[in-house]
Amino acid sequence: MKKIVLLTRDSLRHDYIRMAFGLADHVEVLRTYCETSSSQLLEDARERGESIRVKHLEGRAWSEHDYFGPFVDLSPDYSNPTYIPGGSVNNDEVYDEITDLDPDLLVAYGCSIVEDPLLSEYQGRFLNLHLGLSPYYRGTGTNFWPLVNGEPEYVGATFMHIDKGVDTGEIIHQLRARVYPGDSPHDIGNRLIADAGQLYPELVRRLDKLESLEQLEADDEQYYTTSDYSVEATKTLYENFENGLVADYLRDYDARVSEVPILKNPAIDEQALLTVPKV
Image (cartoon, rainbow, N blue to C red; front, side, top):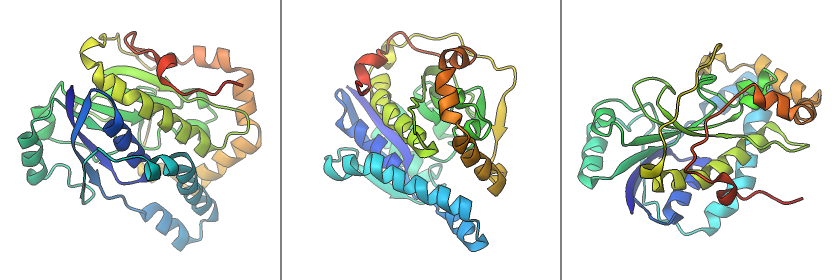
């Protein structure tokens, strides 16, 4: 039995991940610290009259409800959530509470950047789910920008050890987004999170059996910050979809993904874990 403390946020996608851990066999969630999320991006877009960004951000919220709402509403919650202000995960009080709980592992998804002493205290026992394929895309919006740049093959999730860098920890497993005809950007992103929620608890449960992998190198890393997110980028995103981005990607899928290798841990059987429709 792995005893863990989760560090995450309070959006619906984060609720899905923490509740999935709460339901997982051989994993006990001692406590989940949920940092409160800000809606500042949406509020700013509304104030500025940026209709395309408002449509995008509202659409993300509606899509999250479609993908995760029923699960969150209907499932029992064994994740022991505690809500804390955004950015307070490094407070002394939180550190003291976590060390008193004495978890085997810390497990993160979407929380603020973790600093010492918490980082050093759990070095080698601190996992993170990064939405993006490291080292190709790092920073923020790492599954938004590949779609803006017309590169769906770079959309995915990376499970890694946390270190002091930004998305630079040792990778233990990666998952590429499943893309189907007619998908919207939010379909691709939320289906990926749904898949990640099925794999993450198994990675934690089998951590002692995971193999150490030779790490990837990228010739041209892409790094974005929140300040890069703009009306122009959002317009380009939807123009790409209107111009057949998904169809073009699926037509050339094998060739495109072969150019973007990702790491798969032999100890994880994705086919047995993921719910994939048969059509």
